[in-house]
Amino acid sequence: MSDPQDVSPILQTAFAFWSSKVLLTAVEFGVFTTLGDRRLTGQELGAEIGLHPRAISDFLDSLVAMKFLDRDGDGPSATYRNTPAGALYLDRNSPRYVGGILEMLNARLFRFWHDLPEALRTGKPQNEVKHGRKGIFETLYEELPKLEQFMGAMTGLSRINFEAFSAKFDFGPFKTMCDIGGATGLLCIEVAKRHHHLQCTSFDLPPVEPIARNHIAASGLAGRVGTAAGDFFKDPLPRADLITMGMILHDWNLEKKMHLIRAAYDALPPGGALVAIEALIDDARRENLFGLLMSLNMLIEFGDAFDYSGADFRTWCGEVGFRRFDVIHLAGASSAAVAYK
Image (cartoon, rainbow, N blue to C red; front, side):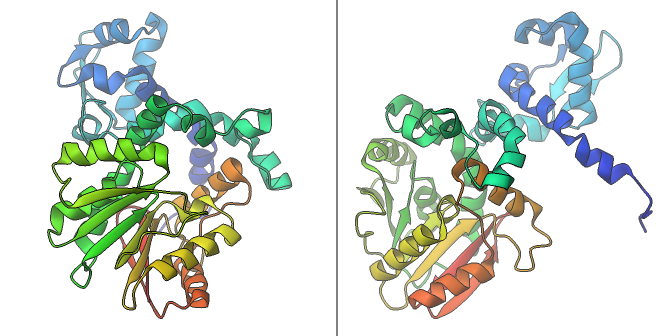
């Protein structure tokens, strides 16, 4: 039994930004990509990524202590290498790279979270908009290469949840699926890989459609995965037996959440289903810390946007007319909330 007088949890959390910044900086500097499948001394690795001699051992050994790097031996002749997880998830050359979201955390959110106190007092965003600049998404949609790079960066994080969803959900009763806000088409691709009877459509804004088409073509699934373009706040959603929204609903306030739920209801046949994939907060709001922190992040990014629980989802969908509900745990902090018409 833990000692109630133990101060360690308090101090570990208070100093957690130290560890976070070391990992985020390592990704920014390309530590894991530079190593690849090699073993390098600190001096060799430091020279390749541009570290000052004073910083090399402290920086790299901190990553060893955090279990993000392995080291063989001690002292100047010791060699550093990637852990299996580091090679899989933090090397940019890996198809399962999740560092894209870490890069965004380092470049944007780390400094915006410094203004959490102001967000809590004002309820207003603390991102680029606060400083009189365009928001990140508005900027991205103006430049296709930047948009494609951003969406590619997000796929690593999404893939884990989408693979779990494609494995755990019962797709048997459905013949067509439309993913709303489908970005690169990743959710449709992962589902179509496993469920050959489904015809899938990835729906997003017009600038996104060519990006999705390229990814779908590269997957070899163009025959069963198509695209559709539109604005989900202005246009009706494409009709389908199953409508999915991966990390979409939490971006909006309650009024816009309800608009999307109603639009999905209208596009579904009787027996159809709406699925929202999110870091769903547990109903008692005591357990899923990541979901709660993600909701604070929505405050910092958008002001009135917020994450929600399965119970919240059931209430909103029930008001629209959905009859049956389920929550399926996917991976880590994420789950799929399901509403059946």
